[in-house]
Image 1: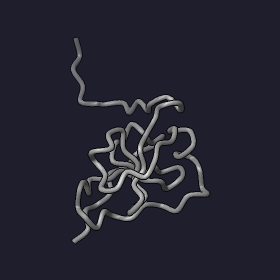
Image 2: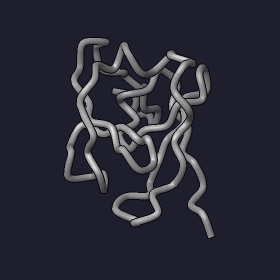
Image 3: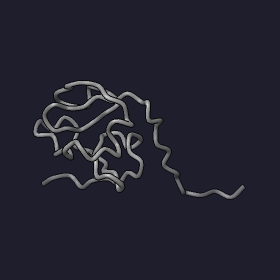
Image 4: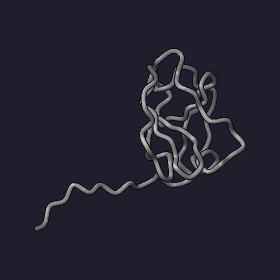
Length: 92
């Protein structure tokens, strides 16, 4: 069998619940990964939506590993919450 290092990204369904941070706007599958959980939404309400401001890096540095969607520019802690994720560089 031919081995390959190719890993295909599989986004989660649009109905997947996610938590968003009231401080920086990031979304996460786990509310413990964000500093100020402010509510819950569905992935379909967030990725692809242009009405919400893009998140900044967390001032409290709870989890600054972020991914940005190449389609809509939204960011998330879990890349499965995005359609076309790309890892964001860490701030200095």
